[in-house]
Image (cartoon, rainbow, N blue to C red):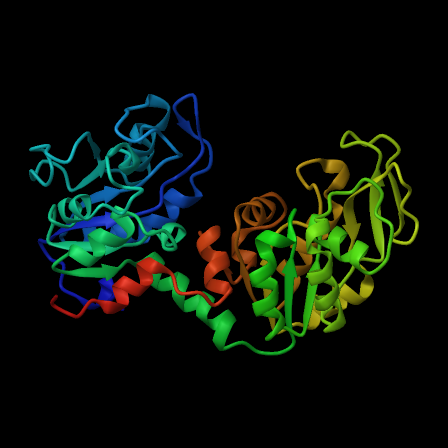
Length: 384
């Protein structure tokens, strides 16, 4: 894969696909994490006397229909403030303002407004690739999607390369997959096993222990023969859960927090062997054994919360996990939207060795799958 840092970009026009799909309310950016993750590539390009046209999606608008709530204008305004340079929002692909020399950095309006993006239209890909001298792909969070801006444009570009963020993502995630040290502890939480099954299976072959939480833990608890009351569970996954339990790496909680409602009615701390029929398991306590394992680990992979941590009543498991990982000297990788929210809530991102910007892309990469954008980048030759 050709990297931006290895080619001459001086006085070149760079079309950079980024992921600035951020939450916006009342015209204001609510969480700038994804925008800030793009800054190293942007600053590197500007420092090396290149001009930039950024491409991103935002939300799920109707194709060929402008919807103001999905406009990237708030993103352009926010970006202008943090880089202290004007960022011009470009409304359409035929605009004469693209690389007109008046601004060093521009942002194309939401790429999902344009016909053919979702269908990976070759014509749209060619148009995007033809806007500049080099097509730079730096949107790891979309690397698993075959769309016009994430696949056809790279394939059609005369020159294409990976941006600094993509380079960093693949470096760190590859280390957790291929160059890890033992003990290796994986922590996998969230609502459903079905969405994490391939990750659990793949990590099961390399990790020493897999600590589970959330609805995923509930399914494993039921598969082990325990009663879980009204807790969220995937009955269709019980047989698979039983097979995984037999392999001996799944670590289940011993002490849990139950409640009759999400509002905390009848909330209590109890043993996993004492869940009543009218209760839900909404959080867990990390045992001393789990905390010791995390403290002694050399590699930690974290994806998903331990409970309904958005509610303070059910946040202890996720909070304690965050702090334990922050205090660990292990090489730690975290990914997924809820995981990053927990990190931002309880510790600092610097307390984790690397926080991935990807959701689905992070899962697929850690499952050992090939991501389409990276595949097509790997097929590009230097100078072609």
